[in-house]
Image (cartoon, rainbow, N blue to C red; front, side, top):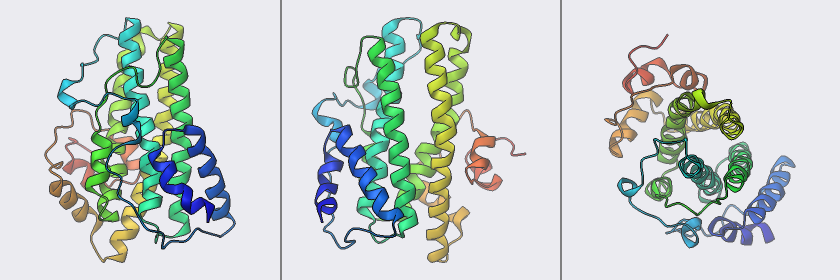
Length: 271
């Protein structure tokens, strides 16, 4: 089918419109109870689609964003978040492409996530443009892409690491960024950034909840205890001892985390 042939090209391409058109067509098909051939050959993707226009550096070589009062400083912050949202488009698409034997409901969930991430990307890139910049103007790291490569062999690992670890970590960080910007909220551009972050925050809770749903679905299928399995997988990827200064207990509980997990991640309490 045409959609099947488009899937790999969509994932590896940089054309956001092509990604959006593909999502729209595939979602319509799935909502009609149909699917593309789940036996299509899965190809490994060894470099992120943004590698053709972004300078990729080691995370330690990225400039620490502390000064948001200058135009460039604010743009660098927006760019970093824009990069996460762009990366998340391909991660959501890859979750469907790579694990094609999952139920239709799973595919609808992750295509809806990809659709949200495209909207987030456009919203943030518009703010960059208003500041005189565009996506690709600042160096980026490829940590999320690397995580997708490391977890491409097991969907259980993928659901644990991408939505339930990295995206959930965004729920911890997002309010801290808003807090840093709060004193300058009367400035029109800062107000726009805060509005965008609030939209992203609310919708990312839903994304993490979808990841939680399918992680627990897979644990049930394999007769695994989801709480123990989650911490075991974090340990496997050496993520269980990461320092987390701000655990967003409320958002994580809303997204499906148990208090046991939240405490194990470093929260002092979980009411």
